View 1 (spheres, rainbow, N blue to C red):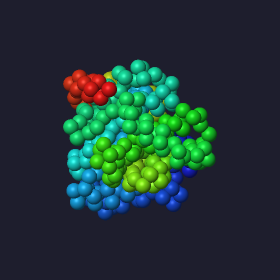
View 2: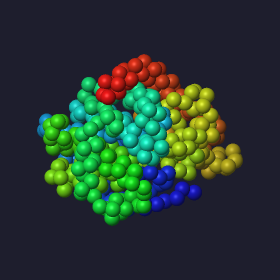
View 3: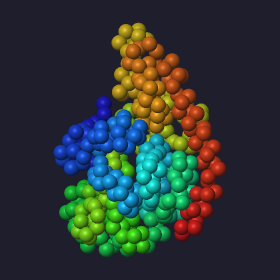
View 4: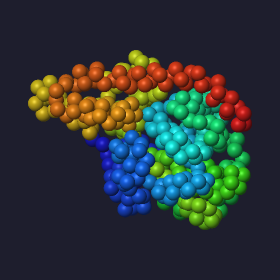
Length: 364
């Protein structure tokens, strides 16, 4: 059973939230059909991208030709997985549709604070992560890519912003933590507000695409921005994807329940064949009652990632729900869509590894 929680913790493995309470308790705005239609983005159409802060204001400024920016990052503690891919694809979508500059942080300091990985240990992972991002379609010519540990402006801003924070504020947002994680949170505020630094043109609207579990960082940054008389950063929120076992948030901490973009065809197929199924326990029940695609992890993987054609996804939904296919037949039919995508992505990534290495080494 998936544990529903009202607590938002960016460093936990909780799987599910009562999403309806997030609007009332944390002040998020719903991703309305009107906004989804305006975006024409499959993740918004499907309700995966379900909430935002100030997205309408960001879109208005972008369409009026005012400077806007996007900001996100990755903790280089392991290879890209599907959660990493989701955020990257949102950044790439907004960059292409609105011509916005992307600020992308390699959060190597957070990897040290949270995972105990040294800066030297995370360098090669950072190169691999960036190559994934480039292979997904990032235009590096309209992006500022940096390591936290090498970006002095971020560290200066974190130190300066610390005067606006109190132990009570940090505890309310994050709970009892060691101070390395509290300072990692302050560093993320520096990351999120970096696009508004005078060296990048000063105040502007910024959107940060995140999973809902990262909202404490957004609220913290908005509070600091208000006190510093900067524009409040906005955000888009996607639903958290469950691990392949169906019982927790997909996380790098559980590789067996996580589809990595580096997984071989054999490994990926094995993981997907073993993924939690929405099918019935027997062939007879499956044919009689049909399955439940809403709890089926293969369906969720395809909905979030590998099938962008809505008609094709509807066919997959019906294959499970109607009972016209047994679970094994259903997986054999649909898993190849994921395997083909992975094969093509890995070829692109291999070609882009030298470029990723050059970008990061030039940034130092």
